[in-house]
Image (cartoon, rainbow, N blue to C red):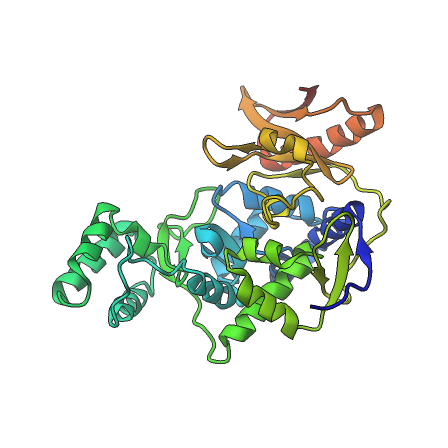
Length: 389
């Protein structure tokens, strides 16, 4: 174990997170280079794999983090294939760059996301043949029904490969566990990217021969620290859905710095040149979407750098496992928000957990008006309402 070289305060960890996420000063967006999409792809790599199980979230998350961003910019890079979306860490839909998808898919496979045989069934030696055949079949967009039909046909033609109870279990779930492979990416069935959640499947980017397991873990750990650090091994392991062992091994192999944690016993790891602004750096209000990375990139009991413990149960709805869209004030979760459009009027409703100062309320209203205009550009009028609850 390395000796910490400095001590990180909770406020310092907050400002480091905000800076890396583009939530202090927005990162450079597509701007005048929309024809290439490169700044957007790089930004998605920088801020981490975006959770996308609620398809309306990524555009809002990117708008809050990038200058001059439009939703069409995201649809364009998805259409070009420079960015892809698929079931990756923790069996959750994420947006990642195509170049880095093999890294995340490798991590997901090694942490069990690729384990599609249910109920304790050991993977038969030839099961990989079925997956490879299905990947080849998915060289063009295939619906879930088409992949299910292909799986049934393959099993019928190869009756001795899978145990009968494994086939029965897959049929019970209509082969959804098999389709939830990190080797696949999701695409729109009609080929048109937009606000509708992509429901079809396509083979993911091929894995480069040079991508070893060690390299994949080192890249994933470095990406987490660059996006969310400084962080503990338990934070990184949670985000990746991994055991601590491979994370700790990668941390030891990398050229990193270590910090202590105020009031804690953990060692925090970080990239040597990653930004760590002063604790008192001004943080403007920001709106984060549902299931936002900035809240979920840490172990469940380690989120106080951005989510005060007193507010967790107001943001996380345990009954249906949902994380609500949140408002940040001075870098910390301070409320939730929602939108509604009626009779051509789009309304952003902000519920602050504590009464905002006059200056903070004015800043929240100004940022909120820009947000509602982004999410509802065709509305005839846009309204921001702020209340305290």
